[in-house]
Image 1 (cartoon, rainbow, N blue to C red):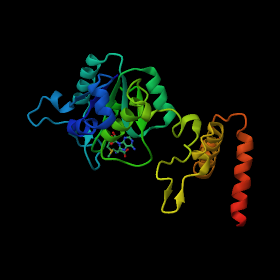
Image 2: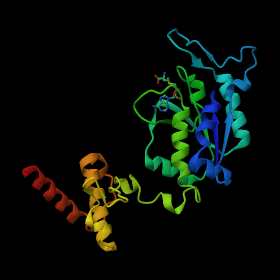
Image 3: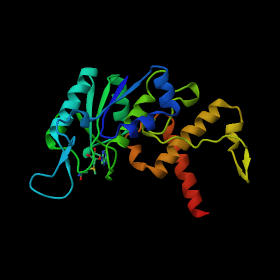
Image 4: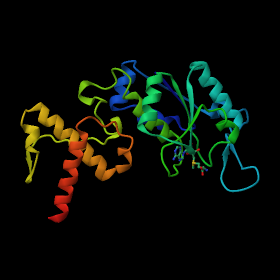
Length: 249
Ligand code: SAM
């Protein structure tokens, strides 16, 4: 899968992709990262990529010509690539959107903004406009890296067996159950007995119940969308009883 970043700060992207799982995946040829700098498509001696807002106001707006030329260059590398622009006004990213992007197995071209953001005529060229949350960042590079990281986890071979993408938080709209490793007793805080029992059915039930408990307690909004299974009702009633019991303690 090709990830093409249209960015004024390619070093930022290259640095972030040069480590750990993403680097291993790139070295293995499972994905590639290309940066295109709109500044390379300017024609004036100052290599200008921004200008003051029409109508007045503070800050600098990204100009349509160098960004449109950079988009055309990216489309030469990947004519079918889906063009994603980053803006706080975009649709908020979530795991199901990540999975949809991954399932398409289509290359992705990221349009990273900076300063006051894009001239609207650049944004109009995007297939998708995405925000990574209700806050404002200095640029679109970090959101682009967030998507690349999240999508890459679904590319076959990127994650080793030890790093499986199955059973993670947000799979089936539930948070993940609590995880433990050795030591069994850490300063008096012990790993739950069931996880040491070797009984796979009991472990599976405990994990399902704790995933429901975590989601109910921390992100009840997710439960409405959760893919609930037969038997989850019983687990849920047990959790409510336990929570009620804790209140009375
Ligand atoms: N003036 C813009 C506004 O008020 O909506 C903010 C521009 S922001 C300082 C510069 C760039 O960072 C944006 O063009 C966008 O590419 C990126 N950016 C900032 N916050 C973001 C967010 N929450 N999600 C995605 N991209 C964001």
